[in-house]
Image (cartoon, rainbow, N blue to C red; front, side, top):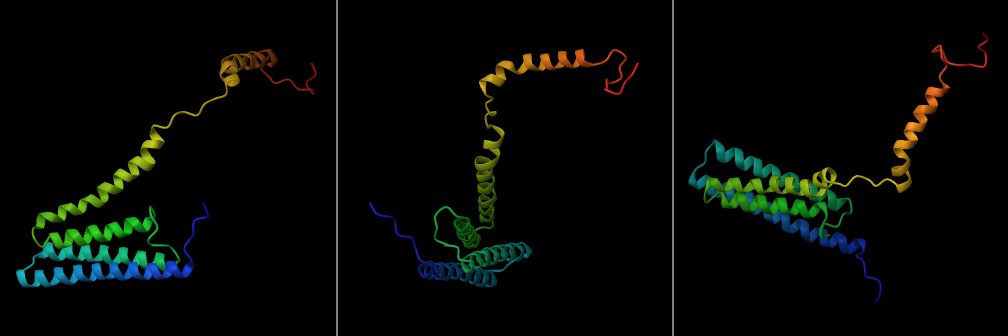
Length: 172
């Protein structure tokens, strides 16, 4: 078994260009199709607001992906942040197109923050809250209370009777 071949910079740039081209097509098609259908079948302030929200989400997410690609990130790498960006674009595009059928389809857009909360819970919050306490060495556990009592007893014995601290310069 040899070493697994890694992608070179040129291959990553070419793959990123193809990925960006695909997602640019998805974003463009979604926004144009939504605008045309809403133009012919009517729209309300709700439709304008939601289309602007979807357009902003699609544009900002695509822009972030483009910036990541220009920085040298492999957009096709499994398990990276760009995977989530691609998912946001696809879910937003799907919800936008489905909302042409019914306005209730906009509720499907809630799957993005719900997934983010689930990921945050399973990856960060739950392990932090339910983490086991760090183990103490056996010696410390056995000597802990006794050692503390001994130290307290030694401090009481070392304290002067009058309450003033003893010093080498105290002369009586």
